[in-house]
Length: 193
Image (tube, rainbow, N blue to C red; front, side, top):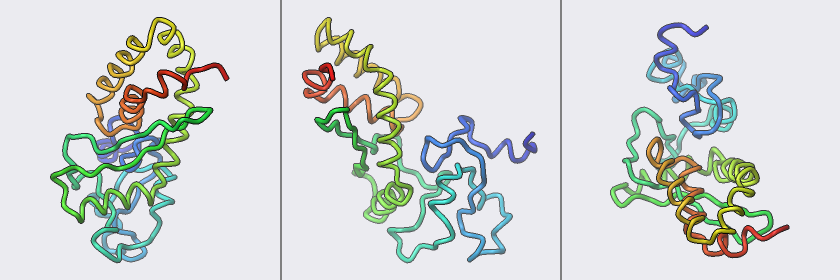
């Protein structure tokens, strides 16, 4: 059982705040303890994380403002959507995620968010999640498409809006907006394999 102090700092969803998909099972030192040993036990320096993100971050330090890691508690990215996705016309369906800078972001913040996305290999990790998720939703999407493309598009849009409420930048939010906007997915993407 976690201590009272540790449980207060643990994310409510128990999802890693660095990637949004892994289960929290370790603490990451925002400032690596190898380089900043005096900060190793400061609560502000301890970030709940999944093993994957903790490993990917490693002990490296930033050599420029654009590569400074994002801190999930102190960096403010705003409430708008910045994680976007595209549906590729492939069989099976492939969805690629990327960062779309917000107008209010500075050039340095834009570089940091893009670096975070790349350093934690979020594009590949989200692609795996979307692939598995779509495999489970394919039958339902085909049933809706049998009624017509409009009901399927409306359902996909409703799913996207629903995911936006808890997290406008969840991979699920980006996925459903991309599917709803993809004419190819609604026309050819659900054809029988």
